[in-house]
Structures are given as structure tokens and as C-alpha cells.
Amino acid sequence: MGHGWEGAVLKLLRGKDFTLTVTGAEYVTEHYLRVHFTDGGLLAAAGTHPTMWVRVWFSRSGRPHQRAYTLVDPDPAAGTFSLEFALHPGAAGDWARSARPGDTIDATLQGTAFTAPDPLPAQLLVVGDTASLPAVNSLLDAFGPIPATVWLETRHASDERLAVRADPVRHDVRRVPRERAGARLVEEVGSALPGLVKDPSGVYVWIACDTVTTRALAARARSVLTAPRRQIHALGYWRP
Image 1 (cartoon, one colour):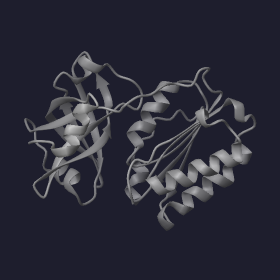
Image 2 (cartoon, one colour):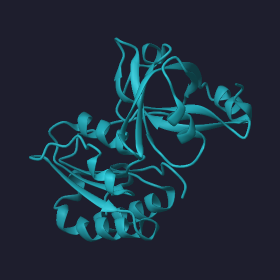
Image 3 (cartoon, rainbow, N blue to C red):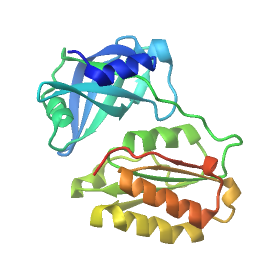
Image 4 (cartoon, rainbow, N blue to C red):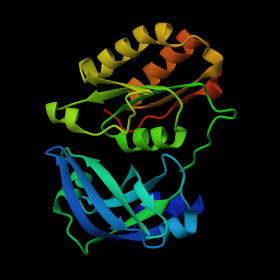
């Protein structure tokens, strides 16, 4: 399948194309599906870093359509990783539901990057949802012993079963049902920030929800914490 004008732009930006092969799939919940792949040489070519993601190509009404997914448990030695799909109607969910061992799909590596704060923060604040959960888990793994508060916005009752890679001694995980198009999450995070952060210079804030909610959360964090922009990473993962 050709990648259309988007693929041409990514080529100009030095995006690298790979073919992924499905090795299996498992439902984590009825709304959340993990698909396993061999990587077609991707990890050997690029290495790995926290929150690493790829653009995966699907066909929508006969046209190419790309969506970004965070790598789950990448293993460069084995050349494998998984992708997790928060299921809803659409080309990506339809493909994931029907994926079988031996199926292939194209992926482009372009735009992914992560630079850990230097020096490392004394406190980590993370806000995500089921779409960004793989990145949240990758971030918690990368920051090791640093204390963290994590807000995870959920859509379904079964989302309570989704695993956050948290240590109960160091990590406080707060699950927030999605209400009023993300407004409840913004309110709960905003009201908690003043009491949680004693030293804004030692905090690192990472936010990845839908684009509207992410913008609102980033603005609230900047106003409440008066922290430099480099200490607040905010990226909209999807459009409502």
C-alpha cells in the first residue's frame, strides 16, 4: 500500500519505513487489545528510548491513514515489541481486531524523541489516558525510583483493570472517569497541584491526553507551578 502525500512528506523528513509482522494478539479488556510484532529491523536500526513511538499505516476508504502508537516492551535483541489499541470504531481498531499471526503492516519511524531532564527531577507528575497508557508505563520504567503522581483518565469500567506499572511505595495512581469532554480531569489535576508540589524547581510534568484537554492541563500546570516550560512536556495524543 502506498502512503500518499503524508508518506511523501515523511520521506522528505527522513522517515524510515519498516514492515511489521503480527505474531499474536490478546485482549487485555474488551476495549483494549495488545498486538505482538516482529519489527522488520526497526529496533536494530533505531535503538530504543522511553515513550518511543511509530506511525502505523492503515487503509481508510481505500486511502492510506497513519496513526502513532507507543512501543510496548521493545526487545532489540529479539526484534520484537507490542502495540496497544484502545478500541473504538475506525480503521486502526478494525485492523487490530482482525489481526492474525503472519499479517503484515507498514510503519514509519519519524518524529519520535525523548530527552530526560538534566538534572533528573525530584518529583514526577504524569497525566494520561488509555491511549497514552503505554507511554505512561514507559516513562515510569525510565524514571525508576523518582516519586510520581499519575492521573489516568478512563472511559470504561473495565479500564480499572488496565495495569499501570506503578510501585505503591513511590507512585500514587489516581484514575479519573472521563466526564464533560475531559473537564473533570482538568479540574482534579488543577486542584491537586498546589498541595502536591512543594518545590516547582524540582518537578517534571508530563501530559498526554486528547489535544483540547492537554492544552488546558498544560496551561493550568504553568499557571499553578510557575515552572519553566522545559519542565512541562505536553503532547496531544488524539483529537476529540
